[in-house]
Image (cartoon, rainbow, N blue to C red; front, top):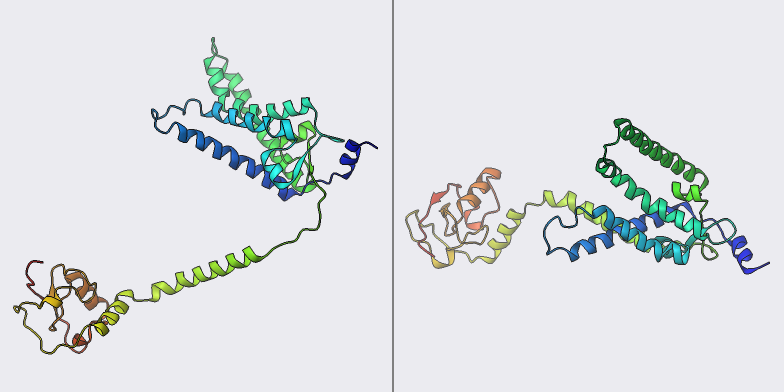
Length: 294
């Protein structure tokens, strides 16, 4: 028994999840390369690559096919996951590889450019040709859906191209016992639980009241209550609630100065708001105050 026969006999079918993950990795890699190419032309005239976007994607697909399926019998995503294509007894032949390129690269390009190709013909094609093309595209999508359902049931041929060419996904190396690790899952569960707890808790915390109480502990006690026309001291030329230069300064009968918005929102939301301790027992009545220029 030769090495190729031993390789074919020991090949194990790839898992469904591995095949689907490989397809997602291939699509993500293609999008990444296309975005990087688009960044290369970022400084050029806008819309320069818009006309050739379909051809650009086809070119990227051909490059990935050339350095993937054509040379290593596996796409880039499959190589990362340790699976490869098998042609039923050995590596796929040249014809199958070319057929894969025609189906995986030429198919999407033809679907995107079919309308433009028909419109460019002279004389114009009959209208029924367009209807037949639309029906053919619909039948292909239906066939792809049926193939996907069959794949979910049998675990073979994730795409219609693979089924038509007889390309099976097998493990590139013997599959051993899987060792699941739950460290990442546990960390994610803890983080999401903590985030949900904060989302529930933060709306219940009155940040303005908390800041006002902390600021009241730091401010020194002062006696007396200046009238509305009395000049404000130098230390009071900042809002006792927000700490900024008071906008439309007002006083409530204590040495402190407040922004009109700060003191009004405090009066409206809570009559016994956490204002500094000098105003805790005073009637809250905002009076305009002239503090002079900064």
